[in-house]
Amino acid sequence: QVQLVESGGGLVQPGGSLRLSCAASGSISINVMGWYRQAPWKQRELVALITTGGVTNYADSVKGRFTISRDNAKNTVFLQMNSLKPEDTAVYYCNAYGRTYSSGGYGTYWGQGTQVTVSS
Image (cartoon, rainbow, N blue to C red):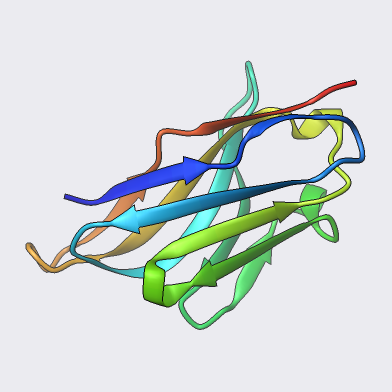
C-alpha cells in the first residue's frame, strides 16, 4: 500500500515563506511527484511537479516564487514557497505517479492535504 504524508502547512503573513514536505512510503517506483492545491469553491490545480530526472514544471501563478525539489532516495518531495500571497491560500495535496512492485501497474496516489493560509 502506498501512502503519502504531507507536513509543513500553516498560517503565514503575506510576503512570508513556508516549506512543505511529502514523504511516500510503500513498494513503489515513483516517476513524477508534485503538488496540487484546491481553494474553496475552486477546482484542484497543479502547482508544480518534478520528474525523477529533475525536470520541473510550474503553474504560471507561482513561477519565480515557489521551488519544488526532490530526494529520490527517500521518495520525498518538497515545495519551498516564498513571497506568499493571500491567493495562495488553499489545501495543498502531494501527488505521486509510479509503478507499484506488487502489481506491476502504474497508478496515481494522493496525500491527505495540508492547509496553507496566507493572511495578515
